[in-house]
Image (cartoon, rainbow, N blue to C red; front, side, top):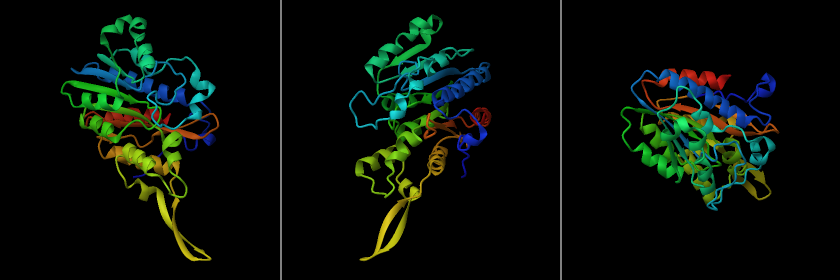
Length: 304
């Protein structure tokens, strides 16, 4: 399956998907989809949920490594000036959409971030009774939520992790509901690509993290090839990295396609202020009946 990653040629096209505007880019796409989503389903008898994992403070502010001290990568891109602006983040964007969602679920494990999320009830009094705040590991909570009944409910779920926190089991649980559309900010360049050493000598810990995010182990064969070179001591075999940002994106998009009803074929590649690819904004539709129109809307939004 060939995936056209929007953003690869943005330097030629002059599109604003790079140059430090990646935070604004992901949020503008999310806003457009949420607005179209609630309008499209406003006449349907569904309870509409918006679910935001790793919701943070609700503002675009400096993201830090896990508060629990786990060995997440340090992301210098996230310390750039543009990410520290106090502008509306995804929770506030969702709360401002009209017509509104029936219910909003904001999840964050960090106690300080969770406390900040509590202020949303004061800022949006008309939405207070619809807001649920969850202070729990996002993987654990989402998997539990996805195992509840989904008849009569539909949802949009935004996964915006700091790094590689999202497990494939969580992604698969979301897909199995057949009721949730997923927007996933996949840490393509900021984390995944960095773990893939050029010489293929990936440690056990790093392998487990890549297995966990991909939900498979065949990624190694997909991204490395065996090379033989002649030395003074004879032939030596080694592995060399053949993975590119595009091929990693294609692989992950294909993985999403194994569990979701439909997946956007033009995920958006986002760049930092030095034009280094850092994230891939992916979309997957959960419901078979609604997938064609959801996919058409999402692909149009991603392609702008």
